[in-house]
Amino acid sequence: MTPASNKGSLLIMLLWAAMLVVLGAFTVAVNIAMARYAERERERRPETYIALAEAAMNEHDYGAALRHWEQARLRGPEDPFVYKVLGDIHYNLQHWKEALKAYKTSIELGSDAQGVRMNALWSMVELKRYTEALEFGKLCIDDGIIDPDLYRRTAEACFRGGMFEEAIPLYEMAMETYGDDLYLMEHLRQAYEQVGRTQDAARLSKQIVQLESALRTPREDVQ
Image (cartoon, rainbow, N blue to C red; front, side, top):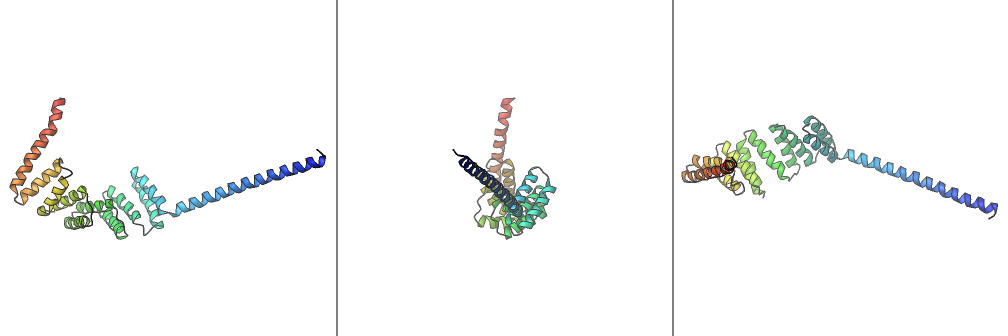
């Protein structure tokens, strides 16, 4: 091979090397730009801060949860899930008034989450707004929510508010699932007594005694 041919081959190799360096640098630059773009997009989305708020709640750090929630609200002021999370923060803190307000806002913004309604109803119970809880529970049932815990919570609102006649069918529906729940059975028994259904109360009293005996028996066997 002549000296001229060697120089030509070396030049070609240098050009290829330069092209590879340029291509590598370009690839790195594109990846950096895409990563920065993705980071900016994450910072713009309320879901990023909702996730942080929920993680803080799991750690029982409600101050941090509220701070993350505020960032989510700034990015999604009309997002119903944002207000669901605010409701959950206050619900866990037993700030019933604030929780109910947040859940109602979530519903007004279009939330169809069953948990939002269940927690809103129980917030009403804790606030002793029993008639409102009953009407809200009936509305949820009319909307097609089939959940024994909904029946139970609504029945509990009636019981605590002295609306025993209204409580009975709700307790009975709940018992189709929670048939061996002594607390539920006792409240239904008392509701029967309050409205004069003494035979139903006596029947349920017998079932309660039998269930209590059955629950004690395994422990006695172990001893």
